[in-house]
Length: 186
Image (cartoon, rainbow, N blue to C red; front, side, top):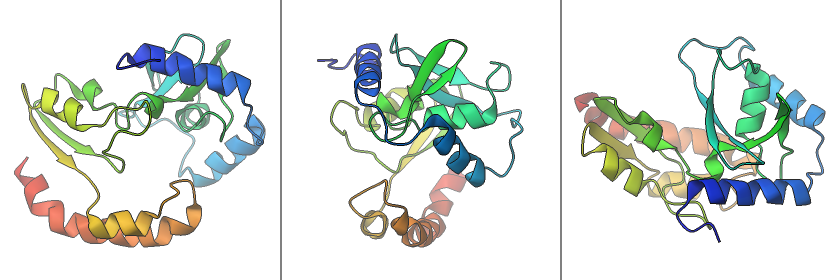
């Protein structure tokens, strides 16, 4: 199907989003996203990834792209078949994580990169992050942090089940304490 071509994979997921509509409306989803945001103002240094559902192209959305933070975050989490795509600028947008769990390749050009990946393994058509980090390490000091055993158990098997959030936060915090010395080195 899409193989290792992110654009083809993105378009394929865009087609899925069009064919299999979510049971949740865009308005309902944005209401949930808004309740989780600390602010609706764009931070100056934040880029959010989303895929143009029609073309499969990955885009970085930010304060300069004309999309609201609420719309961008909604688009960035628009998993086809689960959450509705977000419409903006005459285009429909889906989760930027459909082609990469971290989009670590976007950090190319930086001297130091820390990649936090809750899903380091390949999932279906979505490639794993290790190849992206290996590529970054050719020109940067790059480190990959993935869930340890306790964190994996704490997250549960269904990443969309919010009942695992408290245990995931606790396990992630504990892992952060363990990982902090190696992260500080970078």
